View 1 (cartoon, rainbow, N blue to C red):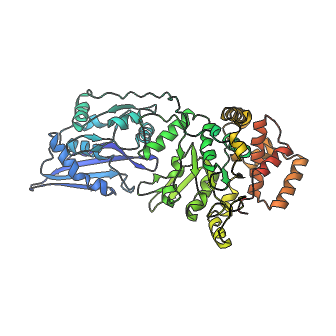
View 2: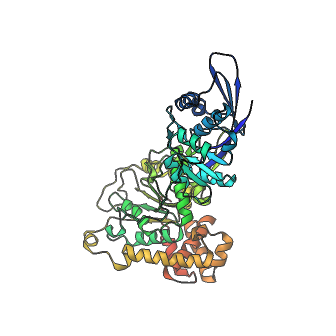
View 3: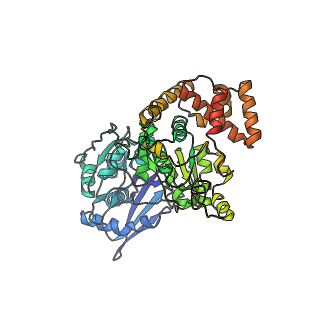
Length: 505
């Protein structure tokens, strides 16, 4: 009896875990074929035994009567998903003498198998290509769409296959499979459905959006219904720079792991707007394979939380760590998974359940207890992590009729943001102002005597925490960059404080 080894992967979060499929066939005088799979397989893999035998029979790779042993190494790591179907079938075929086991070496195989031998696409092609390259494997065989996704990563030679028969022919002869063609050039971005030019007035809010886009700061708008909160929040997308090559790969990898890949490298930053009824698992991710949630799907892009106070409090509390670290850590019974979650947060909320508290000409019928209960869903620690908090009012008829001022036009704001980010990169590299450490702030936004005195007065009047003071300094640094000022002055700190309205305090 000979032990055959075939390399495959299973997806855990955004990572493809390399799995070695070990197969051995033992002929036994019995009336049936027994398939034994060990190595902590999940139900999907255990149920693959029927698909495996049917697909092999359909392609004249019959498994004789006896016992087929299959082990998934490393045995202590739980395996999940349908991507192991193809290596399981090839291992079984080689163990039964249909394929030369040596021809399987140096190649990574993945794909779901139909009972007729068709290969079905599986998520995680980019992650599998990374695992293939890390393991030093020269080739990779996958279903067509998965192969096109994997080919976006420089490294292994990727081949696409439509069915098991073609894979077997390629293994035997080295011919019959072709590499997919992938256009890695970014497509021209489609015009966004919402432009800041659609919003009349709201100069302070637009200034806050420019600062958020330039420095990576979070922003929260509060105001009555119809004031333009959602339009402003959606308009932030038009101020963000196109993603870099590394960001495009990261965004595509996340989309692929979630089954949302559209067939090419991402050319735009993601925009995610989960409903307030979204659960904690829906926001942070989870499930047996630690699938990415909304926070990770928004990585590199924009996370818009409309009606922020309508979200469950425990779901909102899950935002606190990713807002500071850019990473979402998930702990499961047998593993820990770290998912990227570096996003631009923009949120909108009403001041009370009816939305009209403090609005001139409108009567708020919410009791004090109802308002307190409504606002309590947004905790103080979460608010403290949102640097820009702007209270907006409905525009007047005069503002609605007036053309957008040139300095508030989206094109002008975008140019100002691009210039500010250029200054930021020249000074401190790719680290955004919002993520500057205290030591970096001392270097790039030093406290002059007047600036120190201003912050001390602001801290006494508003009861600002240490985090809030550091956030004010970072925001002031961004406002100085928007103006082209090399130094942070007291007027920049004053504007930063004005853009941090004491909402719900």
